[in-house]
Length: 315
Ligand SMILES: C[S@@+](CC[C@H](N)C(=O)[O-])C[C@H]1O[C@@H](n2cnc3c(N)ncnc32)[C@H](O)[C@@H]1O
Image (cartoon, rainbow, N blue to C red; front, side, top):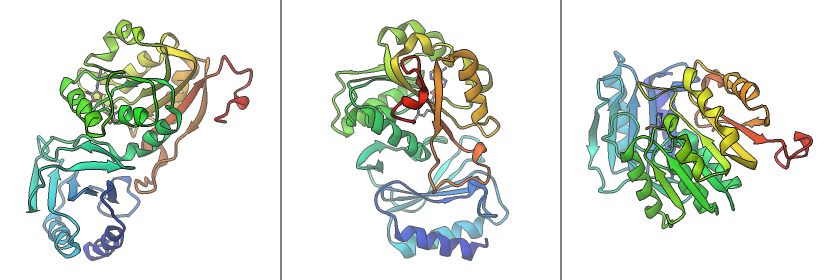
């Protein structure tokens, strides 16, 4: 795919965008045969490009994206983040940044900050996980582990969850999480924001249980805080003391080198009372040439209440 071809592809996709967060190009999944270092998103009124690697033809690519921005007249700003440089700087290449920009998904809003190093406050590929939570949260006590800016909590409460416990060791992202509830007019009386290291805070987390719906969405690796290969098992081993009788677990992982079997085996070996139900299908706008390298969202249910898993309404 040459730069002109990419432009035609983007024009087609740009025509369908609304204010909702839209991935216009997902080179990272390697399905386009070119530009594996590029992602392009339409975020509210901002066109947002991320370069994950330097490319010799970068100037031509940026010029084309700039043309797209000008010709389409859909956005108020064009921002480029160079993820391959130290501290991932973002540059405003055209327009002016609106005072407030939100990630909008299914009518709910989340704060975003383009100046953040790396993640802007919202993970668009997790829409499938949020849809799942929206379908199953009503009347539930929800545990949101690795909560980040609490998008799962917002969705769960909007869908009728009775209470949510959000845990993340980063106080600042939890503050944004609290703001995200406010932004959507969601009461936080029954919401807890626990700024703790999950791996050392089990008694506090257990106190607000048992939980009917547990979300586990850790980083694949965060220096000094979490390494999936070594720490994911520590979360799974705690499930029996956190889970209510009919608990549903959404277990996520975005490590290319660890497939679904990694998580399934952890469950089988450590909490056999949880049965594997299904893997949520990733969004079509995030295609990956190797499915197993992409985001994994696996659903498990505590099956001791059910003589056979087949009788569960999910299956
Ligand atoms: C991938 S993000 C979670 C995304 C989030 N679930 C969402 O839907 O937007 C990972 C989060 O894990 C947090 N984290 C990493 N290690 C942790 C630990 N040991 N205890 C608590 N939080 C941790 C980070 O601060 C970060 O906010």
